[in-house]
Length: 406
Ligand SMILES: Cc1cc2nc3c(=O)[nH]c(=O)nc-3n(C[C@H](O)[C@H](O)[C@H](O)COP(=O)(O)OP(=O)(O)OC[C@H]3O[C@@H](n4cnc5c(N)ncnc54)[C@H](O)[C@@H]3O)c2cc1C
Image (cartoon, rainbow, N blue to C red; front, side, top):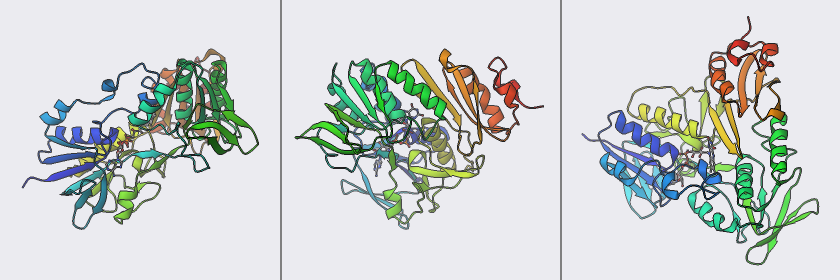
């Protein structure tokens, strides 16, 4: 008898999951539900080329409508999955429709965390998560417009670079003592802050926003230390919240998002999850991770699709991530948490260098800046836990793969 698989969330992971299911021979009914009006599209350009007006909306799409028709993928767009009954294997949609499924995949992603202070709901205060956000922001990025970005994470920094390209006056307000403090070593933060300052961006650290002021729209951002910044537009980049409520309200276990095992299965045997919305065990790092990256969404969606088809597959990948700012490509491979020392390869002044994160002699992760060679070479020693020779590692003339100890 024909089976029905339903995917909730038509983003990066949802798009890969439906493709994988069809490629792997799933011949039953396949339904992809998304609450945005668009077919699945790439998010990374939203803070980069699309925000800078260098890319058309059509080019954001992974696939055009014809692909979904040809592959008998029913796309239900602009519909929110609002309730789930795992015992009855039933999903209720915002238009009153109910669907029954044999297997369900949650790829609901995250939403932008917004400020909770007074004035947070004024006009011209935006998160940056989807096309609709950028379509509102883009016309406001006029030359000389005063753009205040709250949060110096990678989205805040990429947005700053795009706004500078548009000729805006940009200020970043960061609560911590440095930008990208959650993901990179201080010397990488210092390098990026210096680059942004050289491009005319003001970066103010150790600053807590206390309220936003204005009439209907924001005019000023006030901080707890008594400083204030005039603003024509405010963009909030202070992190993301996993969309896990559908699972949680259905009694499915959640822990920093939807909790899945190494097969991407939730606490309900017929419900799987993949991408930004879920936390998973990493056998390699021996901890649970919730990652927000294209690579993770793609790999987990593939793994989830295979397991939905009863082809047992473990998700145990070394994650990677990229960020583009100005002419700088940051590539990060691995997870640096738990490192006990850092080795610098190369000279930041050349704008091409790497930073290696070690625990003892084990390489946990590498950040490469305009130095993709190290990014490629680092995967094997990280995955195979090869002991490294820190002295050789510090010598940029020694290829990274030859810095293995012994
Ligand atoms: C501005 C920006 C820049 C980025 N840049 C990079 C980068 O340079 N490199 C990188 O590796 N990663 C980057 N990322 C992260 C990357 O885009 C995400 O990790 C990836 O999109 C996650 O895929 P996903 O499918 O899990 O979630 P998403 O792509 O977010 O898709 C989830 C979808 O599910 C929908 N949804 C949620 N709940 C429901 C519901 N109940 N019913 C129906 N639909 C629902 C959401 O509206 C959304 O459309 C960036 C993200 C952003 C926002």
